[in-house]
Image (cartoon, rainbow, N blue to C red; front, side):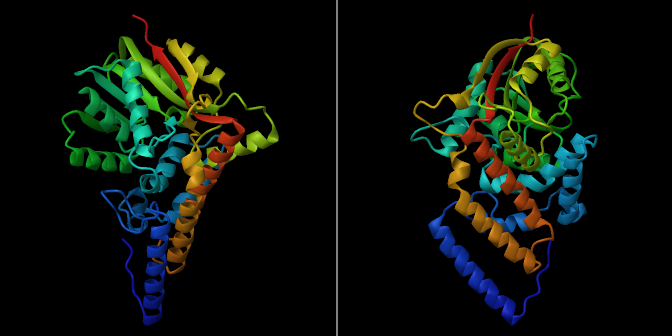
Amino acid sequence: HFHITMGRGTVAVVVFAVGIAAFLRTQNPSFRLFPENDVPGLLTLLNADNEVASATVEDEILNYGNAQDTADGSTQEMVNRYYNLATDFYEYGWGESFHFAHTKVGETHEGSILRHEHRIAEELGIQKGHKVLDAGCGVGGPARAIARKTGAYVTGVTLNAYQIKRANHHTTTAGLTDLVNFVQGDFTKLQFDAGSFDRAYAIESTCHSPDLAAAYSDIYRVLKPGGRFVAFEWIKASGYNGSAEHDAILREIEYGSGLPPMNSRDTVLKAAATAGFKILKDEDLAQDTTNTIPWWNRLDMSKMSYYMTHVSVYVLETLRWAPRGTVLTHGMLLRAAWGLVDGGESNCFTPMHLFVMEKPL
């Protein structure tokens, strides 16, 4: 935690800053200094007891950048460092479910997220008592939603120790520890016996793996014969044309989101075939624009909140209330946000290409 010593001048600055923040809050409800309903506020992020506490935030963001720039570097390390930095900001800006959703006109963000997760349960045919794997679970929002809807037992796997801590906290608060549990691990080298699960899903997570076939193959291994697997993949969309402009957009998304080079639909289909899966459905939900809101709309509409947060972080770091490197961390996430908006508007990128697969009997 960071200890604060204030003189009279600093107190005046604080009072002024809090007043400005209160005004901005009236203009944009998504801007929060303090936590609300277990959702972090901006000041919470700056004192978060996460894995970065063992090193400076500045070192962590620089190490992340080096891992991103090193072609033969440890992708596991890169992804882990990314989520050390990003998890609290994700919860602050998005909620407990770190994914996009196919949003209908008139539907709330929270409603679309929940419907997206319930769709996974329906595509998989999850039943009460099924054992289900969530590969790349984040802080467990989808696992809790699916367990609550179906009565299935859901096991979430993530590389990141801090996400495990947050996932366990939220699950205890929700009273779902009898149905949902979390394991720290690598979904390309799962620590479960063959045939351990009836169903499996990966929501925008296997894109972090530099070897998609390895991820799919181990998920295939732990599924029972006849078991289904749903993956929502971040891939190049149908509008991708190989231009320098499109490649630059993808690079921004990759850097800001902790990704190796972006996969294509063909890469996914080849990885599924290598693993042994039969493809049951292959559909980019982002291409359905009938009575829907573009998936990137929330990012585009939240620009004012992002700018307010960035300015606030800059002021707090300047006053030494936030650790050095916090501005760089938020800047990294801004690069992802703008890249995602550009990727959606140009249709060179999709975060929600749905693949439904089955392990043959």
